[in-house]
Length: 273
Ligand code: ATR
Image (cartoon, rainbow, N blue to C red; front, side, top):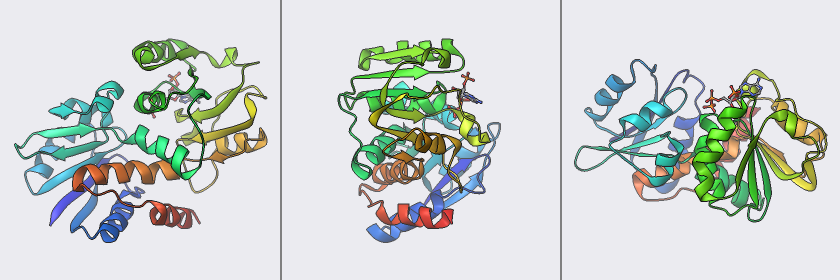
């Protein structure tokens, strides 16, 4: 049977095997999808081992996305720009193709699942690390009015804005420059969520019909999702839907058939308890 897996560290709580098992059942594809704890040091050897023993495709998560980008022999345009790869696929000639489905997954969850318009909207993106780099291209492809990247380390936000300026209107600033500005959508891509922290945000950043979205998710509402609710966001969502959608994009790349994400998102919500 064709083998797929997710590599990362830690990997214990990964929901990807459950999601892909659901997709395989739904699309009647015969495949196995496992998970493997792989450190950055062990990455190259683990990839060789996997693809030389029946592996067809891999997902790579923290801290391996940049290494997967380096390892890929060919890359999609969106992966090239994001400098990160979350999906590897074995090609017929034995080479590895790298893609990044995170941004497309986020856009689909916003636009299709949650009816949040991006075209013409003012977007604030919090954070300027790998997660932000991975989603900026696909967000700009939706023709927003503008995206402002705010980061604790302002130079990193500036670098990101420069790298993507050919794709649309991208600005940069520090958190202390946000007061008085207004946005239709605020996306949190900082690692602060993972430790229950929040970037220092002023009140009244949201337009009256504005929404918030945290790329992170957890059993409980994240600090940013709660902040959004307190600020009166029409929707304040976490990244569960993005998780399912980026998986669906990877599945389609590997198998040529796009699964429906509704059941997977329902399962993920149930598991949240
Ligand atoms: P990732 O790949 O998840 O984006 P990263 O590249 O380490 O991880 O980037 C983490 C992001 O979260 C950065 O934008 C970081 O800000 P700095 O560039 O100033 O380090 C941001 N971040 C992490 N902890 C934060 C906190 N407590 N408050 C605000 N921003 C934080």
